[in-house]
Length: 77
Image (cartoon, rainbow, N blue to C red; front, side, top):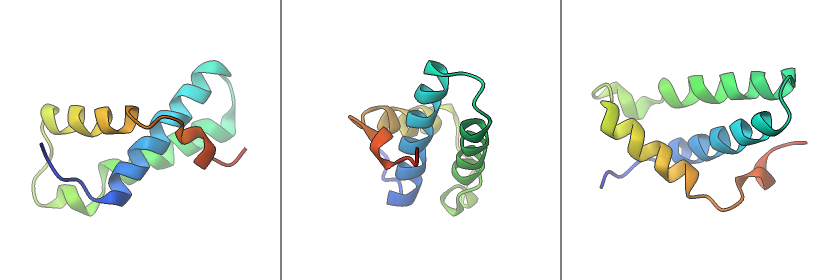
């Protein structure tokens, strides 16, 4: 199991929560923009500068983001 930086895991959790909210209420420009910013934050995080991630690393990070019980409380309404 990999060890990811806390801010990278937090960004992934927020991404997952935003994605779920957008799926429930599509067409919200504000959430689409937030999803885009979080995607950039996760993809270009300094952690990945050592070596670009393979599919297994992305899968593991996404799983950690999905295991958050209710990350939607972290998001601005």
